[in-house]
Amino acid sequence: MEILSSAIYFIIVIGILVAIHEFGHFIAARMTGMRAEVFSIGMGKRLFGWNKINGFTLGKLDESIVLGNHTDYRIAIFPIGGYVKISGMIDESFDTDFQSSEPQPYEFRSKNAFQKIFVLSAGVIMNIILAITVFGGIAYFQGKSEFSTTTIGRIDSNSIMEKTDLMPGDKVLTVNDRKITSWSEFIDNITLKDFGKQLDLKVNRQGKEKNIVIDGSYIIKALANKQALGISPGGIDIFIDDVSKGSPAEKAGLIKSDTIKAINGNEINTLTAMQDNLQNYKSKPVFVEWKRGSQLMNDTIITNEAGMLGIRLGFGPIVNVDYSFFESVIIGFEESYNSFQVLIQSIKQIFVGNLSFKETIGGPIMIMDMAGEQAGRGLVSFLNFLALLSISLAFMNILPFPALDGGHIVFALLEGILGKEVPVKVKMAFQQGGVFLLLLFMVFVLFNDVTRILK
Image (cartoon, rainbow, N blue to C red):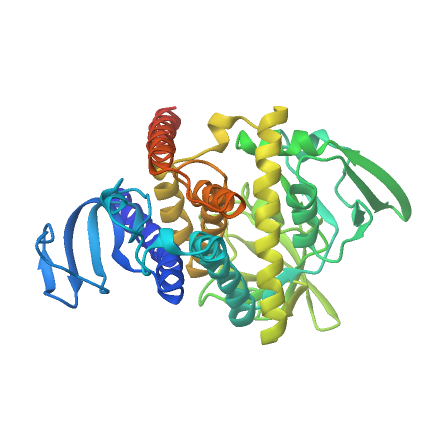
């Protein structure tokens, strides 16, 4: 059932990304007076589709039908990728029938270099717009909630951070001279901002400032190997959000909004402190200290058989930030730019040897697995994943590689410079070679996905 769910989310993600990308090519072609003969979601054999000439039909389109300036909108059998077939252009269909006739005004080959480049880059532009819209929309409708603390509460044993000079109780002031005001800022700065570079931290330790240097390449290597970061915030207020009826906490007089201060003399100031202190006290007495307003209270409470007090916890201090429409748009641009930066830095780290190509590059199976996982975490996580994939798709397609949008743009630029069309045979050779190499790459990433699962 989990595999089916992941497959459905995968189809949704790929369907949205491909539809948006191809819509960019389609609308740009129409704006520049080009005919778009086919708009396909999916590759290969036509399953069904619709056009203005003969309406909705199943299977292969009758070749005798002349669409003219109309488009056949279709769903194809393989739900990976898609295409817009533009008249007079060498594309995934390898159609060269047009070369036997004079260029027509509605054909790609009759347009100037600027119009060609606009149409070829429109898919990438739409993917970027999608990412900006999603990131900005999340900021506008969701805002941001974050722990305002920058104090380190706990460092787990055998974790990435255990091998640094950071210690519980340190208050992080800056990372690479950037002021840190929240826990999420701290995590972003040590994992994403200066991807793989040296990190210079300034912390307050017991009233004195201390400089700490961390090797950023060590962090990304460890994260790539799925090692836990192993650090959690301190200076956290643990308050009661709800008390279960008949629970040990209710019998002891604990009420909503009480703040838990200590258990058995151990201060409760991290996210996991309650669990850590109660896990060995199932159906046993524990000495609990709490605060109600300005009044300090305490009592000995016998936990239930699961080692629980019967309370639902809330955590603070949390800062809730709401953004205006224009602030959200700016955040959309910033997040999209940052995603590009991380993508480029990741590739750089592969070449310098800090990241494994095999562990970093994923294919359809990995995307399917992640789509299901992110969907399980909620709509916001799923949308963030969609936006990140949209940026990745834009980046990949703009590369100057045969068969990709970037490869077609190179030819359009050459034709603009030379003042004449590159021979169809040359374009075909590059297109076929590019498709062959892309298929080889797809086989590699699929094999990579399978071996990663079988580990």
